[in-house]
Length: 179
Image (cartoon, rainbow, N blue to C red; front, side, top):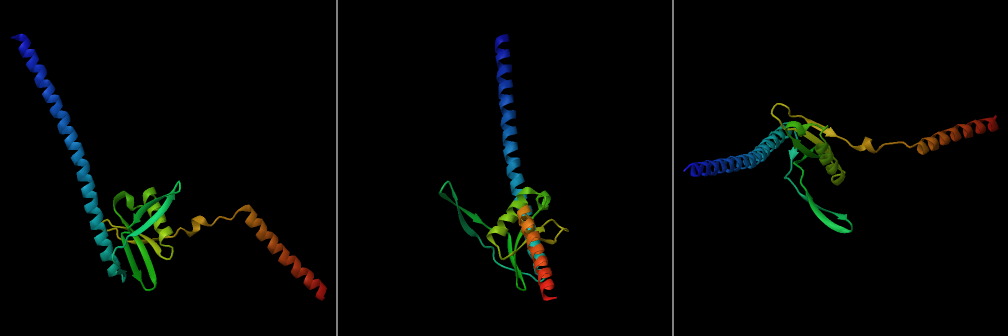
């Protein structure tokens, strides 16, 4: 009889342990799904606020477009899509605008900067913008990557200085010859 009670206790402890792990696993997987769903809802609300903000400030918001691009990886094509959050126009300026909420609405965020740089590469004739879609923080920020490619090498500087010195020397010699 004692053995049967011990076996019953071990059996119940096993069922209890398995139940706890099952509930924990279920809760964890569902909480991730809830976080993703809430993030999407928050992002959609942020985009809606951004569109309203742009329209109130005179922008025409175009239909969302998707580009299909291809890159080669080891000589094998890889197709991928690019879909900016918003394409808007004001006057003659066309904008590709990314809307972010929460911590990703900061330009210090690596993923945000990389996404904006991708837009700059694939939409070269557009201005690139970021809008923080959080309530009360709406503001269009223009992001310009042109200065990041502007680096004068020592050779470029030396050639420029040599050219200027040559111009000055030539001007002085010309002045001496004419006097």
